[in-house]
Image (cartoon, rainbow, N blue to C red; front, side, top):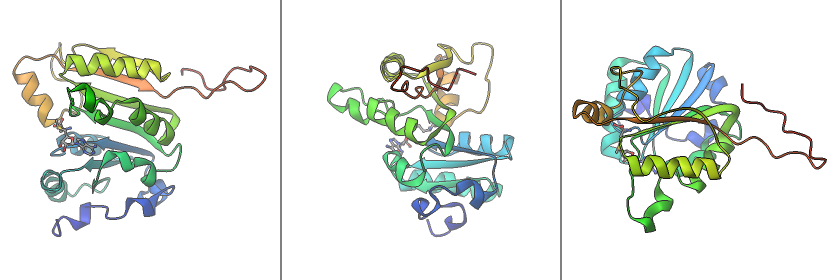
Length: 214
Ligand SMILES: C[S@@+](CC[C@H](N)C(=O)[O-])C[C@H]1O[C@@H](n2cnc3c(N)ncnc32)[C@H](O)[C@@H]1O
């Protein structure tokens, strides 16, 4: 962990509200449960104007991701060893452009549903830290988790901007994760949704919300 210090953020809360200023970036994105970091590193390489924060709760996994980022010398990629649920302590309301959830743990037992990163409480957290035009991008091989997550998004008022049950039907597309490569090699379809946060509630006179689906 010590050797990876240059790519780790020890106190993300200290950057709350000033990530763009601190890293001189245009867009600000976070991947929650980034695993070994393949996706985060690919996005950071492809989008030099973006700053990407990889969040991973298992320190040994995080170290593997950090070592790769360190070797790559990617200036716009950093990691935090923590729980995704702390997000609002690190980012001010409306500070993040994109939240990525890639192959999040499915927590199949109903009594663990609240731990799923697409639960209503998690979605509320993302809605709080995302800019109004921001988005949540979610990929999974798990059909049950995907349909449950679509229900959660709908119930919470998120708007579906993109959706597919087979993201790579014409060959691998976009930045991919380690799990994604494995599942794709086995012929499993990858589900993908990009959703926009709920529009602010109408004013007291019933005036329509200012934001539109651009
Ligand atoms: C199934 S793996 C997927 C890893 C990677 N996204 C990929 O697609 O290769 C899920 C990862 O999310 C991490 N994770 C699960 N819940 C988390 C949470 N609440 N906060 C941070 N990391 C979490 C796990 O430790 C694990 O590394």
